[in-house]
Image (cartoon, rainbow, N blue to C red; front, side, top):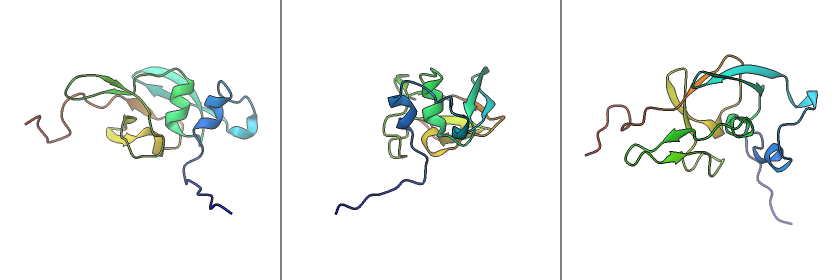
Length: 118
């Protein structure tokens, strides 16, 4: 029998495959957050990257060198394309659970903090 691996982050694709967020109250109460100043109501405790995608947020960031738009790709913390800034700290959205009052922004488009393009 094959071994089934379980991720500690709640599944991100369930709602996307169903064509949107579930209206089922057992899936979590909706809480207010903001992305780049845009008010959103997302499910508390749900995967942040998935909820932002369902809400129509895209892109999440722009690359430092070319400025190309980026959004969630792997949904498991390996690719870093879902980086967002929450409370001034750059984090992977796919590894974060939604909490009320989050102020989410795109990370700075320049090089990493303290870094250069050299």
